[in-house]
Length: 373
Image 1 (cartoon, rainbow, N blue to C red):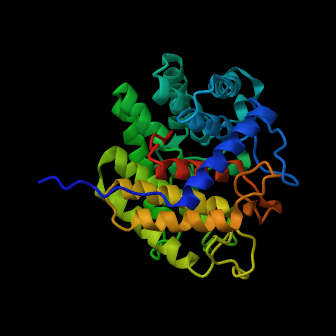
Image 2 (cartoon, rainbow, N blue to C red):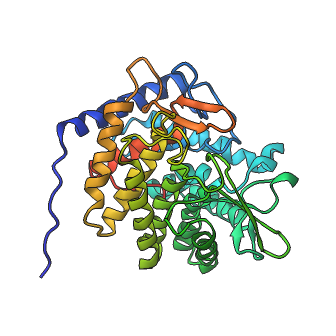
């Protein structure tokens, strides 16, 4: 007998937060247009470069809003920004593209294809998938993250959130090689990045010729063996998406384990600190973007049948809304995010990807579940 799933009745604060976030995106569409955004300065988003790894998130926010707002200007601006990203493929800035082509082309071309079935959007997504696949080093079995001599052999936990591009490419093309490569990277990443206590490394370096592990690096975390909160969020969500595409329960199990560890470490804080193992974690800068990405990962687990995940996501988003919602005078949706604290960059700001995941979570609670991933 099929038992109907209980219906979720959204609390008033959630409905209000969703409406306020949508209004903020509409306002930014008027003030910023077809732009590329990264981090706020004094509450405002300056314009950024098309090749920077976050360039897909602002047009992606516009694409998310088109699911509930039929204003043709929104889709037109998102397409204009997507066209700018596509132009990088025949530009000197092509050399700046790396594993984050997923973050650039999933919220833009892939989402447009999901929403409209546009054939040019599908072609663009497949080109990006080929670029990502080309970064795979058979020695070590990992996708290498960055370009340049100093970054040879570096692989990072963030790539787990770029792998959905490869799973989508197999789904839309019927070619299994994309998904097979994603699974090969996952096999290495689960072994080399996720520690026995279910925390994660940010960066692991492999010898490009032999594939041997050389070392782990702190990267954007406090230390090589610390617990950078956004890295754990990438793992939660990326593994849950892999479980959705493949049906492999092992990915769901690992996602749940990292989520449990994330929630336990975050319990004293509410809003995640930038690194759970920072020496001053109790007072250190927060990273609301880690909380937003983790909430989306929990919602993915909920859709996979995890009985606790929906409520855990709701509690996390409620905390973010209460403690991090930007005042009306600012550009961002969420305050108190931290980008690169060890490098002294983007501390206690709004980050466009944090805004993106926050709005995605709000939409998912409202039943608008189609995502770019």
